[in-house]
Image 1 (cartoon, one colour):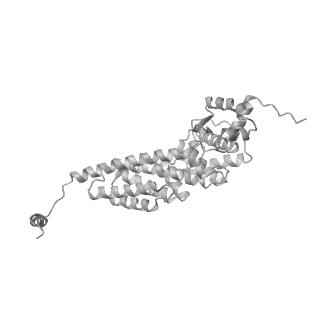
Image 2 (cartoon, helix red, strand yellow):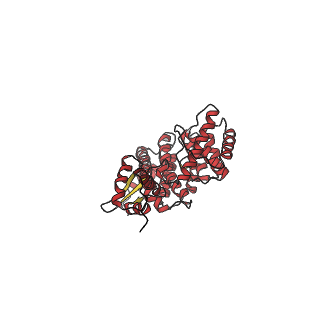
Image 3 (cartoon, rainbow, N blue to C red):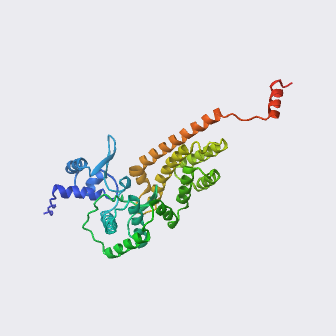
Length: 341
């Protein structure tokens, strides 16, 4: 007689479904295969998980639906249960150390501290480059309780490293930490971005702003998204034209908004590119299931901001009155009467 299959409770079946979705989104057939059950049995539990907001349907057609686990990571990029537990322990330990120093960390501080500890101890946790530098893939929210029963074998080493990192950065402002972070992890694109946006915000030295923009333009990534280079080139050209018209200070806010939108588009690509270097992830799947819509949205925002700046430039160009020398006026009068004969 064949061995009777062990009967599982509804909660156990739902937990199995969530485990199956840890690595990547799956369709109905793939979920059924992963938990060794037919779809008619699994379907009701999938619907319950949808209602409980533990998973979501991300791609649905008449023939196929894909389901994705809702995680506490950026763009629901999947991490393993072991990684989630270790992230929770790390965040909790950092927040605990801050509380011992009578303060709560800012989100950027929690992110930077986590990255420093992960890199210094070579913890097996995924990180990526995004808008403000290297980040832990799980969202570091200092207002949350990262409760976990997990205690890693090197827990004491992690706690000691956290103390070292916090003491090394004590009293440092967030902006200063960001600048040091870009240098420490040797990312020239982020370093020049920081200088460019800061310089453009004040526009006290127009030549320096143009020089920094030239360097940023040269370092612009040539990637799978040619629009990145095209938009960078277009904005670079517009800023130079506005300088010729003497309008940089007048429109510094619009220039900074355009730069900020462009940078967020570039940063979304940086996120994809840096995560894709981790063998845990497949670039095409990340684009399809996680980052594709975000990249498109940020591209659209950059296009809109730069298009608005272009309209401003064209308006200035139309209204601009250029001084014409007396000699040029005489030549123009002579030429106006010339019939080509």
